[in-house]
Amino acid sequence: MKFVSSLFAVCFLFLAIGAGVVSYGYTVYSAAGPLKQPVHVTVPKGTGVSSITSLLEENGVIDNPLLFKVATRLTDKHASLKAGEYEFLPRASMSEVLSKLEQGDIILRQVTIPEGLTSFEIMRLLKNDKGLKQDYEGVPEEGSLLPNTYAYQKGDGTAFI
Image (cartoon, rainbow, N blue to C red; front, side, top):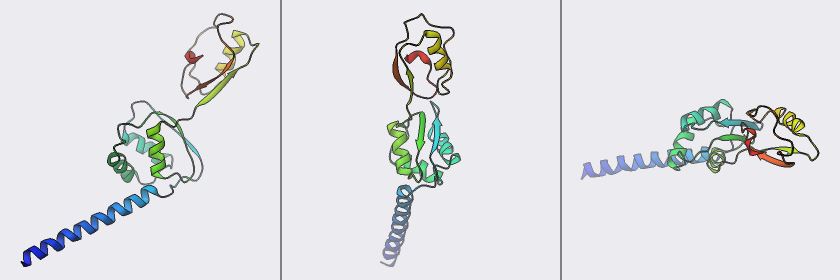
């Protein structure tokens, strides 16, 4: 009988410690993050959880990388994090950061091609846009580029126009 009560006490102690660790982890996961000012972080395609965690830590978005990795696995979001350029706001919690990465809430940039520009002028406008990958040589046929406002992600080429 003494053995059973000792075993019960040990099990209860481990459960209490486990509950405390989970409670502490959830509190830190949900609390305001360390970021003092907005920051842009680019997650390249094919980047895994460990590399994403390192990027976030290096940029000051998170300050507890182990907890972030554990939360990513426990919430089963590790396979659904998306690449792209993200803006993280000051004091964003790990929960908010993880949600943004899962939803693919990336920064969309815009370039506006006004009416009346020649193809040469449009190509010069596109070459001056720092977010676009310069993947087009020469000048397209006159009239083949239409005036409009186009949305793109950082690093996209000009094929979307």
